[in-house]
Length: 501
Image (cartoon, helix red, strand yellow):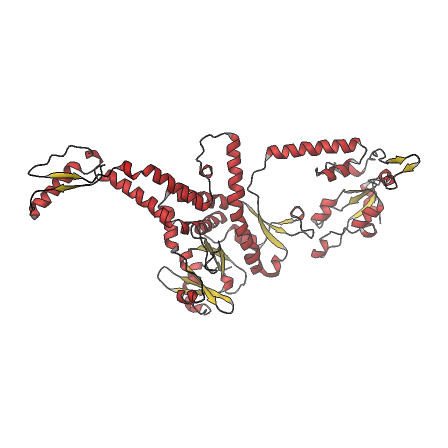
């Protein structure tokens, strides 16, 4: 299948559907603000080390998270979803274009978003097909929304490096942004709020560099008692540079002759307090991104506990919000482009937050103790595990339904002489029915998951299997298959259950 290359799409302005272009002045006429230069915000990453470390770490962490495509469950629960392993949308997300895997695509987008507050995905299609075939991350400074007084947004305008403008339709662009309070058409990034601080950091570093290149001493003034002609001026400058310029010549004694006098400018590096200035600049940059020092590896007292806590905090507070923004774009903008084939599907990321082992162990111990106490009191073990939140620990092997299952002691509560709780006799007949699913290639996931579930009486069993067969949550009908599941008496063997009507 032929694939459309982005360069051809963006440079063929003549073939694109005309979209009325609204200038910046017109945008301001609607009462909305104007963003600051996105180029300056992106260039700052290569000029300030702290900014580079922050953006590189957040973008890299976001790009390394795995994604999966799911079919939503009728119950709405995540644990009931069915994973979809083959779909055009999944193929596109795993390989957005011939030159980028998903990891590089997400990292490039996230750099743009962290630096400017905007991320742009341009969709490429083949003229003969409506579904997306490629996605490309595009620099924010090359994209401009085209406002419309009635529709709010008419489209987008892409400006190529040679200045040529190409009109793009709404379904050719996915725009992710951190909302700008002054301009609903643009985004706002943290770098925009600290450009002056970044400039101060950059210039202080350059001043420090020039300090060492220019004799490792602050500048001064050479005074003479008369006016020098051009030849004398050039000779004096050349000799002074030869003797004192450069790190190797620092602190050499100057020899002045013929009325030459050195006047110090009375400025030292200590007066500039560069150490304090650089530290303040780092703090300001981190505050703008909401990143503490330990997230960048600045930890004074490192142990396993602090390392685990730092890792968990970074994933929960920095990586997850970035993943949620991507998830929203995938599910609400990209998937609908695939039409009916994407109905009921959703993308979701694998949780990057590491599990809290100690907390989970404490919860498991508490649940196990509660379960033991309830079973000792006479309640059915399977009911207890479900009530306290423990996993089903029944044996799932072929012989699970062959052997008789010992009954739990009666849990009837005596309310007084000659009185017995009316609800208690139900426990004598507890867990007398079992769900049986015919497991083959046509068995849906809900039926397969419910295979072997126990019910305490016929009424409870028939609630899930009306008339004794056909699971109410079966998804086979969606694929043209009838449910083959049923409920039978527990003492019935699996062979007898398969032959039961």
